[in-house]
Length: 191
Image (cartoon, rainbow, N blue to C red; front, side):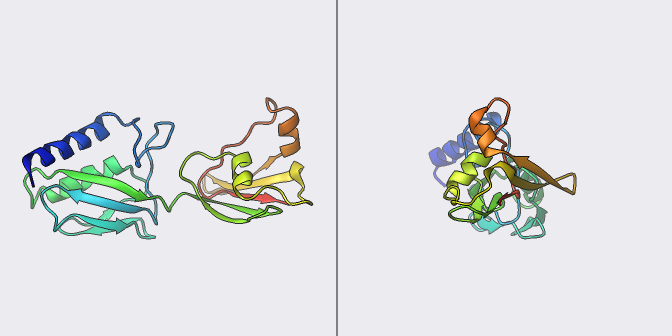
């Protein structure tokens, strides 16, 4: 690899780890780290070692497989954390490996909208989404929708949690009826 390209790539990697709140595919808009999950597609680059670099999808068991590094648990980790583990495993075979883990496609963060909306279905979550935004993305309400009893079905501590949202109340008094930010895996049901 050309020396200036190697230096540039090292600088990009340094910036990504030194400034975790910076905008990148591996972070959310609010600066919190992106936790990888099953279905996410990653590009793993080991600089100067193309035979070890590869694009992988995190399997349903939360693991990935890489040449020389073997099986690695990736789900629930940030790209930076995963990069560190891969680097540690490769040090047995490669002197001072430079590893970059880039999120190519986020497939693990999804939510669902069901019921009286224009386009019920599954939606990717590439940034924080509120109930009102999710309903708009799903085509808005159908004529007979009961806007005052929207359910958000999610999980809390391993248990199912149901939260209700009153859309009409939100429009009348937004300060008293909070626009709920949904979580990955939530299902919004519009009766």
